[in-house]
Length: 301
Image (cartoon, rainbow, N blue to C red; front, top):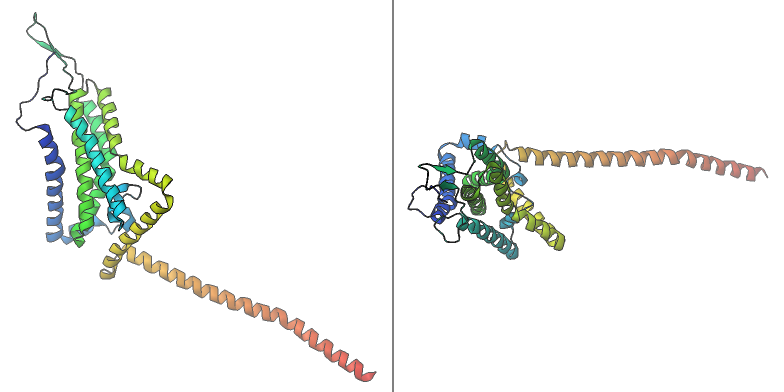
């Protein structure tokens, strides 16, 4: 069995490091340039989002916005676990390793001048692979983009770190899935199956968050409320500076509604008091008239 490979002097581990480090930095630098030289384009990209729509509330990676050191340690721990799992598959994709999982699909017979390739992966299979991958990783890419836009606008360090980590892990998952399928997939079915298995590693942060909700429900709810309040404060500062913020308008509408409800309740209370007095007055009049009639009858006797 043989295998035709492209000659390259760059190890696959170095390529992965470039994918998870250089690409996010370049992406964030482009966003910084857009924010510096084109504020209108930045506003169109940002679209005045709700503060709770720029991060995944069901993920351990939201703990970076928490003030709890334990929560931040969990953030680092799950990120390290995901990198370790993906590195395991990435190492197995390297054809130069002795323990490689690379499948050699080219058969060369001694009695023939040509070789036969058993691999049947075609463009339609890769199209389905990238479709499944981008649909699965698209949410993390989107959150990373929105957080990068926010970080560039307000120079927020936590949002910058969160955006960088999300983009790096998502890029590593995409790179590893492609490299592993190039090494192992012999047909389109195996291409999709391997992609689904690797993409499951990308959901470890959400699975671990679900475990925390089961074992530590009160602590998890406290952290979630703390993070929501922190994100609202970040947006509230912007709403105080800009008058056209949708979130500022919504908050003012909530205040007006509450005031209107208070006024309505006070009016209803006053109406209830007046109704009670009007209901009681006929009884008082009858009682007084009855007393007068009893008084007159007593005088006559």
